[in-house]
Image (cartoon, rainbow, N blue to C red; front, side):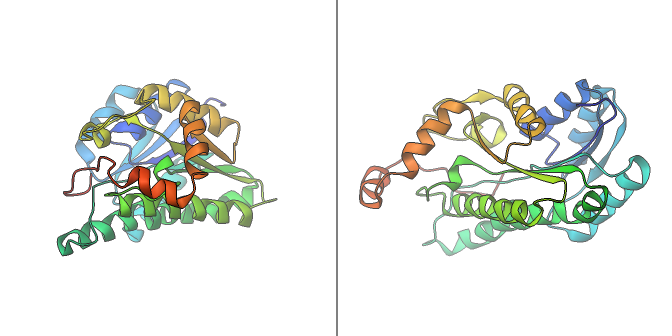
Length: 257
């Protein structure tokens, strides 16, 4: 990546977003960081010693995201890379009416929020004939996991949305990269009470994500071991999948994180 490249990241206050911010700062990038929690994001930014700006934004809020995008573009130029990383997760049960607000919040953040993040940048990137739009999906989007209906559905929708966008922008010079992580050590996974195979640290995940982004890979699963497991999982017959996963451990229900 060239020095002074411009990278715009949502969900940048912690976890994968914070690790990506630190990675690109070390490479000399100008950063636009967005998150709901301003204080931890500003604390992170103060340690990075790079140019850029922080924005307190909920990605489901079209007006605030557009304002952040406009401010960053006016001050620093159109980003070279936009990473729609903001995402939330919680265990959900369709049977429980109290979980319906969690369903809506997860779908709004993980799917609609991705479109809101990209929308202000598509036209200027197309006009410039360059740029990379990156969506952070999940291997949870490959099959419907019990107790995680909202999260699995949101990530499956994100994967399909990103594919549509990639085809729409074919030939424009604008790349669309879909990244499907397995388990990453973050606050989101810290509450999981079950085994998480092939789990990797957020800093290592950021390094691997950045390599996929630099290569403009259309679709990638990280880590590679999870790619093999996911390949097998996706090809399980439905009858066998249902039988194997009916008693699988489930994510704790509660407010989305």
